Amino acid sequence: MMNYTDNLIGRDTLSSLDLEIRKTIKHAKGWIPIETYDMVQCGYPLPNHGEMIIRPDGGTNAKGELLPADGMWCKVEDVRKLLRNDEKERVL
Image (tube, rainbow, N blue to C red; front, side, top):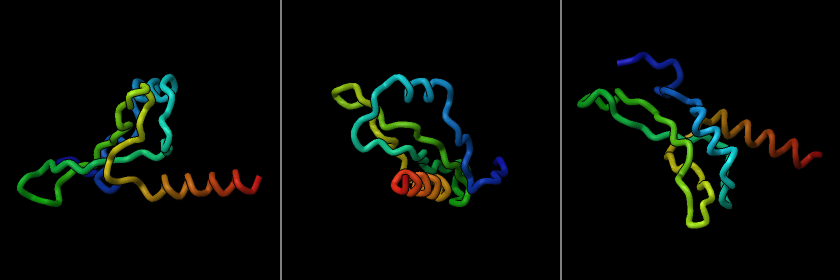
């Protein structure tokens, strides 16, 4: 089992393909720029051995628009960053 330094989060960056998809496909209504993760158990039967895996998007809808990520978890620092950016935009 790997030793994770960031709360069991494995790869937390988007692949080049994921980035290209985000640039070329229109985002559906409700898109938010926060990476989401799902927990996958790696060390059965021990419940404290797992890894958070990134869920970069939720597929596409009937119009071909990219749906928001559908993972269950996100990082608090990502939410804080989004909120800080939103506050800056409202002030300007």
